Length: 394
Image (cartoon, rainbow, N blue to C red; front, side, top):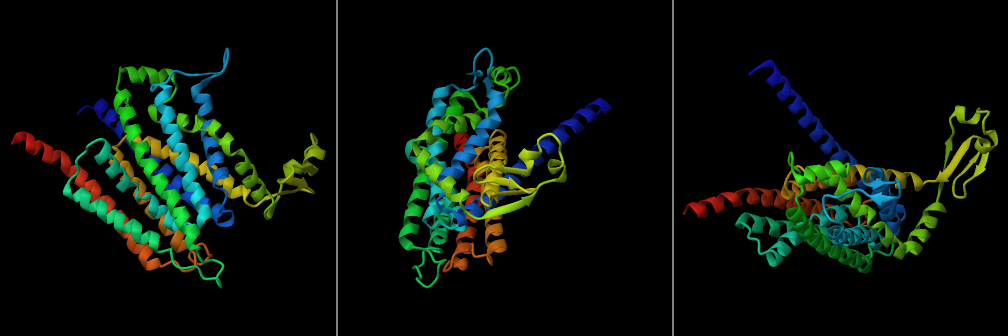
């Protein structure tokens, strides 16, 4: 092999390694950090789900706005690789799923149960694909789904003990049941969303190839397919928040009237000769600047970090979806949830974030069943094409 060929191979290998490092950093760094900040907010303000969802969607939409909107001679969207109508169904489902999952925190759903229960989407996805698309599954896949189901049930029951009136951190069974109902509805809608996305990408094409029509559209739209999907799923959902504007406003007032945090401003801001009155004393309402100290509601910080880490998280997930199969994406996300679970239980077990009465043995047993079942489902999926080949040969 010539030196030029070696340089090309090394360049491609470095690019591939760099891409995967970025993707894994966004998923494990961004998503785990997002779960951490989400737990911090919902622990203090359990009814802030609508506000959190709105902020997340707003930041992702603003991030993609310059890439997919042309401002001259008038604001209009750039050409898309997928028509607008298929996105509308996905947007409605995605919007409802996000609201339901975040709203569940207002019904005594601990973060640990939240993480594991959402892993049960594998079960719902399999059932819907079997009923609606007539897909067949191997024995290992069916067995693995049963294991996942048992793990989800066991984890759910780990925090469903009776409420103790003498303990403020105990769980209300009625509220807990309502929260589980919300998350169950979100799982079913998530299964439908997966089917819609698979059908959309199969019809219009998800990955571009050199010289293809999708590649030329990607160049005109100034973004690859994963960026387009990420932008439109969030951007087209923004008008729907108008329906819950009162809830968002009340939740924002709740976190704004909470505990305050004082931060010292840098010296160069205080000594400037440009606008000394503005820097020295100014009232922003919930936040204020006085005598070199910035006072803001404490909840603003985790809310800001949650929206930023959500941008990193969804970017990593969409990039991963553009490179590997949906089964690999599911497996990777389950591993990520395992890391989030370890952080939530191990690091915060002594801070009161793990509710009183939660049976940790059942929690960990359920978690192991969910993760083991997911791995088994992945291995069963790899065996399926071989079975098809043998059937054809026979």
